[in-house]
Length: 331
Image (cartoon, rainbow, N blue to C red; front, side, top):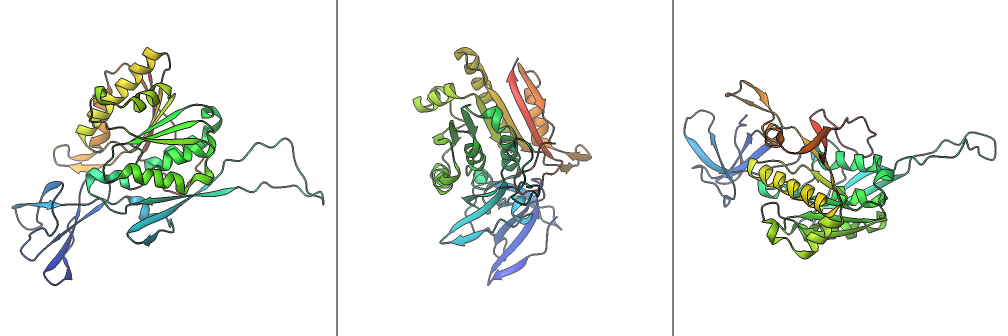
């Protein structure tokens, strides 16, 4: 879908394009002659509505969640901070309790907030600077399994702004390794978010760089030690192009193999959202990124289990039917 252009200022025009990444609108600023006013970082070809000429444009991506819930977002000095509210899991009480008048005590849910600095719109390679639904789904699962994961060492891959790792640290008294590639100063941002939420944490979060596209021979000693010490591997919304998917699969291969070699096997939990698009080739709505992942892992020596999403929801977001949670272990 292409919306009519509207003037932003003299000689500056903005167009909205709907492209096959969820229902996101992509905004392109250009002058009256169609020249892009920003330096293009990622290029895509889209035909204008009434013509057959393809134009090269830059686009940005915005996560859907910002329009679905009120995260009390504040903007100050170029910083964007949102509050992600949650309810703590209910503690099991021994027997029935009554107050001094003999009335039954009804336990009231304890509430909390994770505050995160993040971006509201980014180019595709920097989508980790935003918050996506998969991170919230995985955070819910960690809350549900808090007793099972207690005492385990966790590592998050492609952690983005750190929401899932911080959620893990709320109940896990052990160590959590929060990793990502250091694009857009994201590791500095994660460290700031960890510090911002330090009062919530009972565990220790260490921030490390882990680049999926780098050779495993280039891993730092700190990263190798973290990998060997980890029991649970987490990943949320790390699939959005085939090249990165291939690199991610290779990383999982290496992690599972290394776990078998060191006698400390890994269990991987991966959350993602199927993003459907209609293609003329298929004459149907398909989820190309998810389907590519499935094809590329068919012959892997893994056990891949799609987990039901009937566990409690502790965070505020739309748990839509396109969300998927996968558990991966070695055969």
